[in-house]
Image (cartoon, rainbow, N blue to C red; front, side, top):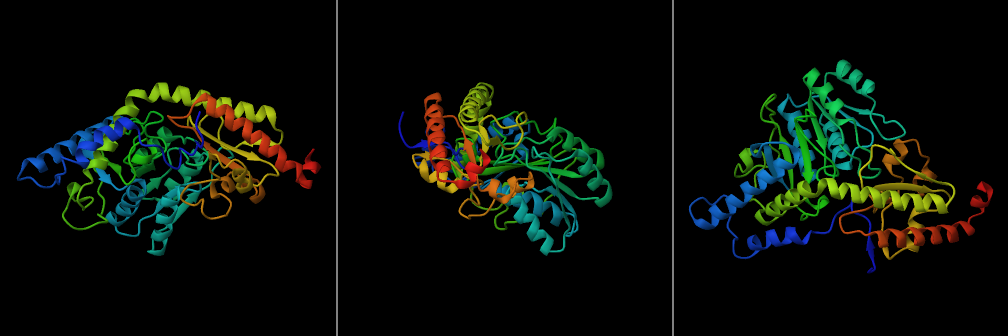
Amino acid sequence: MKLPIYMDNHATTRLDPRVLEAMMPYLTDAYGNAASRSHSFGWTADQAVETARAQVAKLIGASAREIVFTSGATESDNLAITGAVQAHAGHAHVVTQATEHKAVLDTCAWLEKQGSRVAYLPVDPEGRVSLDDLRRALDDDKPVLVTVLFANNEIGTIQLIDEIGALCRERGVLFHTDAAQAVGKIPVDVNRANIDLLSISGHKIYGPKGIGALYIRRHNPHVELAEQMHGGGHERGMRSGTLNVPGIVGLGAACEIAAAELESEAARLTAMRDRLQAKLLAALDHVRVNGSQQHRLPGNLNMTFEQVDSETLMMGVKEVALSSGSACTSAKIEPSHVLRALGLGEEAAHSSIRFGLGRFNTDEEVDYVADRLVDVVRKLRQLSPEYADLT
């Protein structure tokens, strides 16, 4: 076992060597522009892009023509949400939830400034949206779009995506989901779940950073979006800009690997996650798991260690890469909006750690991290008079 140990796989993942191998020719000899249709360099690049488009589509049960490449899930979220609103009279109503990723929440906040109305649904203590709340929002507010995170990036909670999709389809409302944390880790089928728009990020599934995709349904219904980037009409006019061919090839390869190994990898990660959780719960009191115990991503574990500041705890185990929340906001010392939405107080939210287990973690690393966490938590609690009151 080598130090440091990486357990922050919700923030980003290591590039799989097999993905790098697939990308290398397009970083060296096959460097053509996929939009150059007059010579073999462009033809080679274009064929590589179309192969990757099919690989991405297959992973989520879509057709290749429904995949548009972007720079990542954040851009995909912006294109899906803003594009849908602007394509439907500009000030359309949107329904989302309180525990969304900032890429969605900040986009919705911007739309509100432009005159759109946004409803933010609460979640239960496990982090799931109430179908009754959603049904009332659909009936009362007549939104053009519902956007609900497939699986939460902090607590790993998986939403009732099939049921949400069915409600949206029944009411004739577009359904978008940010599936950056779900795709490649759990089964995702856009047709079974009646998903109209779905965001994907390459670096969450052992692919390269700076590449992602947006699934846009073409039939029943045909989804129309207002483009957000102008210049050249690439990607069927949905997303202009010279295509990142090496990144696209890497995303395609990552999706193909994920499809082949999804079931076995999910089982292995779940076993490791449960091993880590059991060790921590057995050795420490006043510790709890945040989010759903049953409906959770295989490699996710979010725990609150009462009377222990999470930033101090992470400093105590500097040889282990962990997180106290979303990578997009972790530079700010503020309580997680996700944990607060679950009902945790500010102090408890500041005492929570996210473990993100991934493809390259081992049982040996799990045991080491558990032992180190237990040791540091005990030492920190010895310095806390408040902890003495708990016991």
